[in-house]
Image (tube, rainbow, N blue to C red):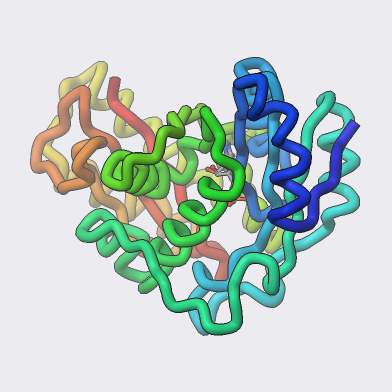
Length: 281
Ligand code: AMP
């Protein structure tokens, strides 16, 4: 069964019973429109904690002015139905008034990491993410927070934030769940036509090819690898925002691929911005 919590004080009263017996609290922050990727995190939380709490909140401050905040898909009833099938969870479903005071003035920003890659074309996005996650961590005070590798930069930034700000929560990063054709599952895939979904799978296929080339043929100079990925995406009708090969901890670009490198990519298919990434280990 799902226990529905709408306010911060609902969360406190509900979690009190777990906190006082020092039960392990597992937390999965989401924006809802849940798919198998989200559900894999909730399953991990259920396996590794005494209580799994999921937040569903479309956070306005992480969307740019021309982004899809108002049309972002929302169907909390269906989300709750899906969660109900997984077992006993609690869902925190706050409204904007609950999450932001009218005169909200405090922002959390992880410098450098937030301005690169997705931060370049989505100015202020990560500031919104870190601020809301910091607030949610203060509200839920979980032992574990489960995040998807799909949003790799986000996970790196949040790990840095929790370390810098002495949060006790440990972040567990879980593998990306994909459609059959390899496309990373995302709530935004709802914006794509079937044909666009097929073409968008070229992102992951070209990332996989780069890893194969590195492992089988020792191709490790980044520039031509990046160019090949871009050509591949664009041959499938995509418009690349960026493709970078970076050190997976610092997110700094590298010139030569090694086992600690990761390719991060963002591309538009029919106006929908999609992201994906792959490691070389
Ligand atoms: P979102 O609702 O998009 O904010 O995502 C909430 C959490 O689910 C984040 O930690 C994401 O990284 C994770 N997530 C989203 N898509 C996937 C996926 N396809 N596989 C695994 N985790 C995912």
